[in-house]
Length: 261
View 1: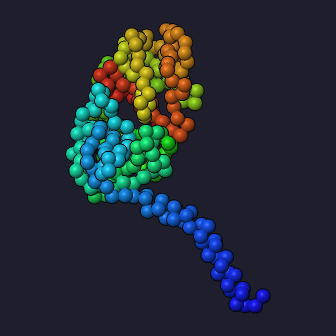
View 2 (view 1 turned 90 degrees about the vertical axis):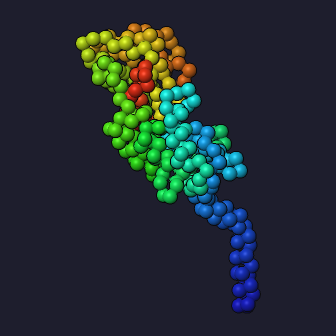
View 3 (view 1 turned 180 degrees about the horizontal axis):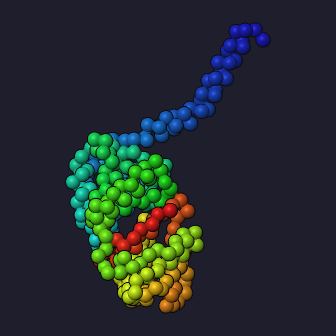
């Protein structure tokens, strides 16, 4: 084979290779460009959901704000509305671009400020990473810790007499087992108190008193409650393998304690 034929063959093979991989290369380029996007906010649904142009719903990453009917729902929604409504924002997407409701998942930025993070700082949402800890996790957890120190909104500490009595003795998230201990010399009425994860799972104490110097165990099983064991019904599993947080709140929704892993 002469030199000219060899060159022609090489060029032909390159063209075939490029044609075969063009769709892949084009897709990769689009994905790269779509890591960030500029959009206009048309309205705010609640404290962690907005609607942008073309009626596209955006679920804010890294946070979970109160639902309608819960304390601070209106305040969280109003904060997000003042921050972003009728403004141009920048979206930064996470590893998963859509949630199970087909909403886009994103961090939203205005002039470089992370609005998701601001909601946590101001106690209008807790940090929430159900798909695993990303590059922003440490920053969001620190924001929550600072919020607890400033005692704002969702971070406000409980003033119940028993708030200093109840301690988390065991948090076995792998086996969905929690143990609380009452270290005080008096009984504590925990009726209306609730355990919550970073998301929407709740356990509410129903007419329950934890006696002095006693334990109560909460497990995920479908059995009858006893004096020392309660069952978190309706859930097969509570805590995620990738990390989660336990929040204990009193009957007025004030924060008693929290623990992350």
